[in-house]
Image (cartoon, rainbow, N blue to C red; front, side):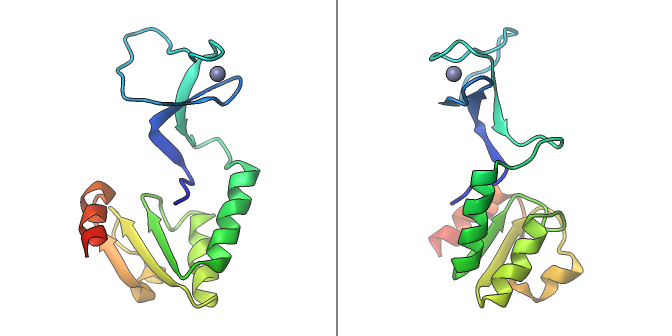
Length: 128
Ligand SMILES: [Zn+2]
């Protein structure tokens, strides 16, 4: 599994990218890294940020070699995720999308589109 847009349950320090599991509430003070005292921020991609080049290369390689591409919790109408569907399908991989949004016209022929919150849908399909 590659978390393309990050993980909201993890924090990352601004200076050194140390990762910390995050299950605390912020008490009004800026959370700090235990290792270097740098400020912590959510380890997610904000709208004005770009995906790390190394992570992007890893994702591209996975999409080019996978048998099943499962896209969860990211709009498939926005690139780069939108392009991954076509790349995987051209290579013969099956594509499944889990999204709260209604499927767009490109997704109609995917074979598997599950509409709903990923937290509700994923446990159901993983059991089957
Ligand atoms: Zn740190």
